[in-house]
Amino acid sequence: MGFNRFNLRETRRKRQCCSTQHRTTSRRFQMVAPLEIVGLIKDPNFHVAKCIAEGLKQKFPEAFLDPKIQPLLEFDWHTYLCDKKMELRGEVWQYSSSLMCFLNGVLLGNEKDLASWAKDQWSFTFTRPKAFYMALTEDYYAKHLQKTGHQFVFMEIVIAGEAAGRLLFELFSDVCPKTSKNFEALCSGERGLSQSGLPLCYKGSVFHRVVPNGWVQGGDISPESKGNGGESIYGPTFEDESFAVSHSKRGTLGMANKGPHSNGSQFYITLQPTPWMDRTYVAFGQVVEGVDVLRRLEEAPTCNERPKYECKVTDCGVFRF
View 1 (spheres, rainbow, N blue to C red):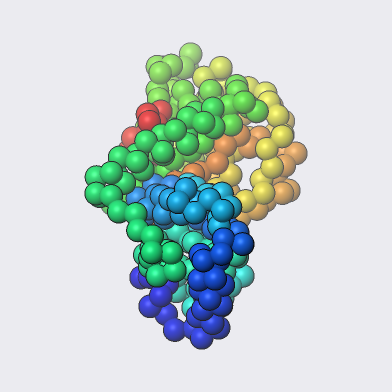
View 2: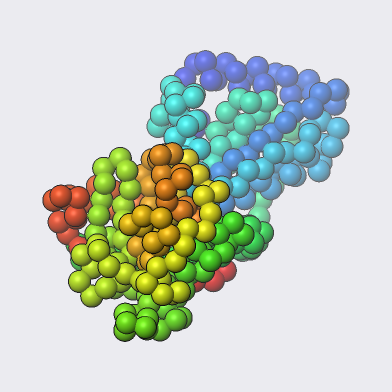
């Protein structure tokens, strides 16, 4: 649903002011108009808007500052959109596009609204085949992940026998290399069996605990998966590596423990900021994709914090890009 389908007089008034201003600017080139594009990096429409903004700057260098481009992975985009809805309110409550275009801080809308504005006010168009934007999106996404210098791993989740989707994790291997390697290896299964004969892999394990407004917990790789077992790739347990990563947001990934220096294979994903965990549990990554999957895990009916339906990891591994 495009932003321009809504009917909010105040927003339209602001856009008309912007339009009037830039009709003058297009003639005299006396002002600069900062464009800002924020959106979901995996959506080709984000790259459509990005190309338009960059094209305007290239064609009218005296009239435009360099556009501010903010590509976001799914989890961060969802957070950004929720925050913007709270800030802007009004018609934005129903905003469903995967990007936002701003002119002088005023929301223009999505890529279609930006294209319409560029054509009306600057007689500027930028069109390419759909395949061009698909290829551009794939390449930009891969380079964005590579640029972090971090490892990414995934889990395919099935809830009550129904495929729920994929969780994609970013591991902060620069801050917690040992903890990150433990999680990565347990996702890939590369270490085979532990000294006690346990398969060192999350595949087939379950999320055994859901704490409302707290966290979801999994990673017990013992056959029973009751929530009191599991081992690390280094032995039964290993030490707390660092408390540098804060539990400051939803989607933080950390190691569950039974006390200091007792990390094994069990992990948790926070459902909201949990700063009380900061000096007790080692956080070492974050969920970057899988907003709906985490929501479904969070909403699973429970009895004594254990899901009534099996929430299972059916596949996992290192994410290749």
